[in-house]
Length: 120
Image (tube, rainbow, N blue to C red; front, top):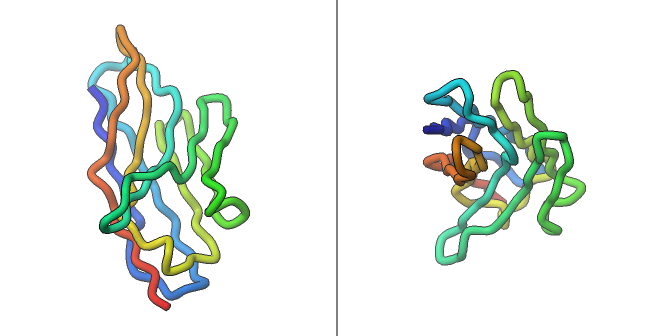
Protein backbone atom coordinates (compact mmCIF):
# COMPACT_ATOMS: atom_id res chain seq x y z
CA UNK A 1 0.00 0.00 0.00
CA UNK A 2 3.05 2.21 0.53
CA UNK A 3 6.08 2.37 -1.71
CA UNK A 4 9.25 4.06 -0.48
CA UNK A 5 11.83 5.42 -2.92
CA UNK A 6 15.20 6.56 -1.61
CA UNK A 7 17.79 8.79 -3.26
CA UNK A 8 20.95 10.67 -2.39
CA UNK A 9 23.46 7.96 -1.53
CA UNK A 10 26.95 7.88 -2.95
CA UNK A 11 30.66 7.98 -2.30
CA UNK A 12 32.11 10.73 -0.14
CA UNK A 13 35.37 11.38 1.66
CA UNK A 14 35.54 11.34 5.44
CA UNK A 15 34.35 14.63 6.85
CA UNK A 16 32.02 15.21 3.93
CA UNK A 17 28.25 15.47 3.76
CA UNK A 18 25.39 13.74 2.01
CA UNK A 19 21.63 14.24 2.04
CA UNK A 20 19.30 11.28 1.71
CA UNK A 21 15.68 11.64 0.65
CA UNK A 22 12.83 9.17 0.79
CA UNK A 23 9.38 9.71 -0.69
CA UNK A 24 6.36 7.59 0.15
CA UNK A 25 3.87 6.85 -2.59
CA UNK A 26 0.43 5.89 -1.27
CA UNK A 27 -1.87 3.52 -3.06
CA UNK A 28 -4.89 5.03 -1.33
CA UNK A 29 -5.31 8.62 -0.23
CA UNK A 30 -6.67 7.65 3.20
CA UNK A 31 -3.43 5.97 4.27
CA UNK A 32 -1.86 7.86 7.18
CA UNK A 33 1.91 8.00 7.40
CA UNK A 34 3.05 7.94 11.02
CA UNK A 35 6.73 7.67 11.95
CA UNK A 36 9.38 7.87 9.25
CA UNK A 37 13.06 7.22 9.52
CA UNK A 38 16.27 5.59 8.48
CA UNK A 39 18.04 2.37 9.35
CA UNK A 40 21.38 1.15 8.06
CA UNK A 41 23.14 -2.14 7.61
CA UNK A 42 26.86 -2.57 7.13
CA UNK A 43 28.34 -5.79 5.73
CA UNK A 44 28.37 -8.53 8.36
CA UNK A 45 26.36 -6.43 10.83
CA UNK A 46 22.74 -6.26 11.90
CA UNK A 47 20.43 -3.55 10.67
CA UNK A 48 20.41 -0.66 13.15
CA UNK A 49 18.36 2.44 13.75
CA UNK A 50 19.89 5.69 12.56
CA UNK A 51 17.10 8.21 13.16
CA UNK A 52 13.33 8.41 13.47
CA UNK A 53 10.89 11.29 13.28
CA UNK A 54 7.26 11.24 14.31
CA UNK A 55 4.45 12.86 12.38
CA UNK A 56 4.59 15.65 14.95
CA UNK A 57 8.31 16.22 14.48
CA UNK A 58 9.76 14.47 17.53
CA UNK A 59 13.13 12.93 16.73
CA UNK A 60 15.24 10.04 17.97
CA UNK A 61 18.86 9.39 16.98
CA UNK A 62 21.36 6.62 17.44
CA UNK A 63 24.12 7.75 19.79
CA UNK A 64 26.69 7.22 17.03
CA UNK A 65 25.14 9.91 14.82
CA UNK A 66 23.95 12.47 17.37
CA UNK A 67 25.31 15.92 16.59
CA UNK A 68 26.22 14.93 13.02
CA UNK A 69 22.98 13.78 11.36
CA UNK A 70 19.70 15.67 11.15
CA UNK A 71 16.39 14.06 10.25
CA UNK A 72 13.48 16.10 8.94
CA UNK A 73 10.27 15.54 7.05
CA UNK A 74 7.76 17.25 4.80
CA UNK A 75 4.36 15.86 5.72
CA UNK A 76 2.67 17.42 2.71
CA UNK A 77 5.01 15.48 0.43
CA UNK A 78 5.26 12.33 2.59
CA UNK A 79 9.02 12.74 2.37
CA UNK A 80 11.75 12.25 4.95
CA UNK A 81 15.29 13.58 4.73
CA UNK A 82 18.55 12.71 6.42
CA UNK A 83 21.28 15.32 6.36
CA UNK A 84 24.54 13.59 7.16
CA UNK A 85 27.51 15.77 8.13
CA UNK A 86 30.95 14.88 9.39
CA UNK A 87 30.74 11.47 7.77
CA UNK A 88 33.08 8.75 8.98
CA UNK A 89 34.14 5.46 7.37
CA UNK A 90 32.06 3.69 10.06
CA UNK A 91 28.97 5.30 8.50
CA UNK A 92 29.47 3.18 5.38
CA UNK A 93 26.35 1.06 4.97
CA UNK A 94 23.21 0.44 2.99
CA UNK A 95 20.68 2.97 4.29
CA UNK A 96 17.03 1.94 4.35
CA UNK A 97 14.06 4.25 4.54
CA UNK A 98 11.35 3.12 6.96
CA UNK A 99 7.84 4.16 7.75
CA UNK A 100 4.84 3.02 9.74
CA UNK A 101 1.52 3.64 8.03
CA UNK A 102 -2.07 3.20 9.12
CA UNK A 103 -4.65 1.78 6.73
CA UNK A 104 -7.07 -0.36 8.71
CA UNK A 105 -4.00 -1.59 10.66
CA UNK A 106 -0.54 -0.29 11.40
CA UNK A 107 2.14 -1.73 9.15
CA UNK A 108 5.83 -1.11 8.62
CA UNK A 109 7.29 -0.52 5.18
CA UNK A 110 10.88 -0.49 3.94
CA UNK A 111 12.64 1.03 0.98
CA UNK A 112 15.12 -0.92 -1.12
CA UNK A 113 18.11 0.91 0.30
CA UNK A 114 20.66 3.41 -0.91
CA UNK A 115 24.40 2.84 -0.54
CA UNK A 116 26.53 5.31 1.39
CA UNK A 117 30.28 4.79 1.20
CA UNK A 118 32.71 6.97 3.15
CA UNK A 119 36.35 6.74 2.21
CA UNK A 120 39.15 7.51 4.66
